Amino acid sequence: MEVRPSWRGLAGIGTAVLICLPMQHGRDPLPSPDPGPEVSGEVSVEVRGEISLPPLLAGMFVATVRTWDTMAADERLGHARAAGLLLDAGVRRKSTGGCTDRHRPFCTSLEAIRYRTLMRTIDLRRDSGCPVTVTGGTETGHADGRYSHGNGFKVDLAHNRCLDAYITRAYHYWRTRADGAALYRAAPSDAGSNVGSNVGSNVGSDMRADIWADEPTHWDVLFR
Image (tube, rainbow, N blue to C red; front, side, top):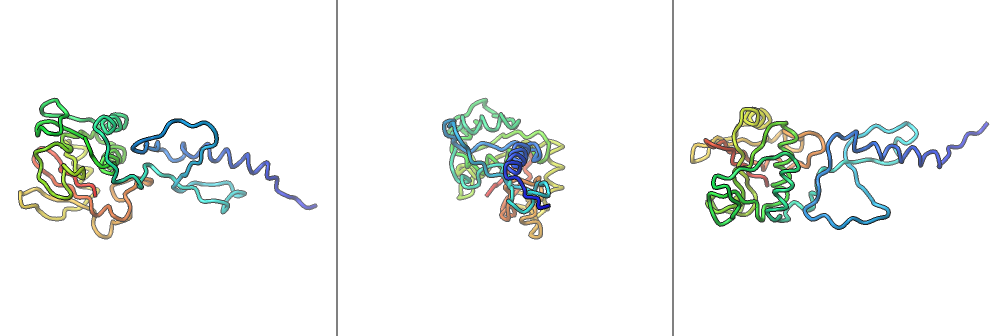
């Protein structure tokens, strides 16, 4: 007797698999810099990462999971939007002067910070499981340069025992900066291997460009 698969049955199984994908991944997708208005109707969702599919569906498609939009990496965020994303992710923010004015060095501002810089900070919080507190952003008072605080490439993160241990374990000592700060980064052999990040983070092969400077009161972090 010839048995033919029912496409109606396949559609039902496919729907069940898609509904379960976010739960299997274990990390909530993060929003893009400027989400549009809610639209009713059909929505196309791209998911990246490895999943297990029923034998009947194996090979029919590849599912992937994305945690944040890498196409928007260089977009700039306003302070309120950036602060809200940090708050939602459980990342704290502290200012010496208790202010957010970008033009005052004793404030902590996120105005015009790069989307990638902010998302990598959130990745750090989720991947490490450690408390993360931003103490410096795009405010004036930091050194100038292309990959600087003012240009949105850097953040200062307060020291704590958990975070210090995580960074020095996940990254490798590279060299000592002129001011005496020890610099850490991914070893060349780690590039693209998601060292210091759970599967699904958008670290990619350029993670070697991230530099962690161990300063007396904080980590001075460059996210390229």
